[in-house]
Length: 406
Image (cartoon, rainbow, N blue to C red):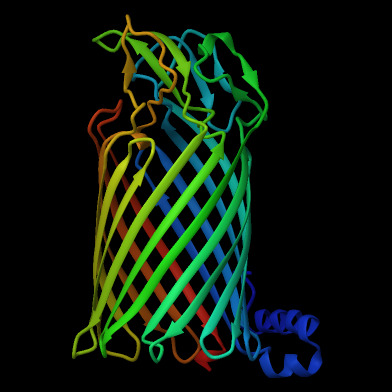
């Protein structure tokens, strides 16, 4: 779609609308569409590179119905920490998109991978009367060793002269994961045993409660409470941990094991205020907790500075994140320690700090679209992991066009 000119895209959308509504309705709504195209590059020096291509078309199909269709294509290459200690020499990892591990006398704590992901989502929002909107959503995501299918429904009710909006959302997802060859390792088994099972399956259920409140002519606040309950296979089939001495000389390596149930909750609050000169300052705070022992706090700040020209602005932003480690997280297992029931050396479950800073630029292009450019720097600091830190550079280019620009 990125290579298709604007006229051809509008023609395809009009054709699709005609099939849904009939010729008369299509004449009313075929041009009431917006198209978003975006490209993102995520780059970790000497580690991971992700290139993501995104397209979304959305618009009215009737007086009270709005739909959107989105497609994401990701290509992912590089190397990621396996959980093993650095410089160990028991086994070799053939990659997170390969067949697992080989016993060959050499090893690395980084695992090479190469994969592609395709995701599609569909949303349909229907208005019931003046004050009730319900959004129905469905999505699917497929890559070499993971697949997910999900659906959601979210209702919004406007109250108090539309100064207050209450939201209730429900969602469900089913996924399956494995190594590239369709197998999952036996949890807590020695890698040299090469003991495997079939695919791992998991079901996840979400509930969202939210309220959005207008506090004044220029101020709006939002509070969301989310609850997530997942059951099934939570392991990463490529992650391992090392049994090692105090000098990090590895003696054995085991596949990880995580509990087969996880309950998560999060409280999110945000506040946005428009200054008298039109600039917008915004901030948010999120608290997270789960029954694995992980607690996290995330804060964000942004300032949208309007510049010369209609709709042009620059927006610096920053984000800080801190989390505690899971109850079963370990960097290594001691030489004399018994194997626990659950264990993982995945640094994402350890104590960490993360910081993001960046700048977003938006510029209308004549009368037919808006160009957006975003760049940011991401830094992670791990308190007790096989790698002390990690950094990434993120660049995004987006373009939006549609009938509202004409």
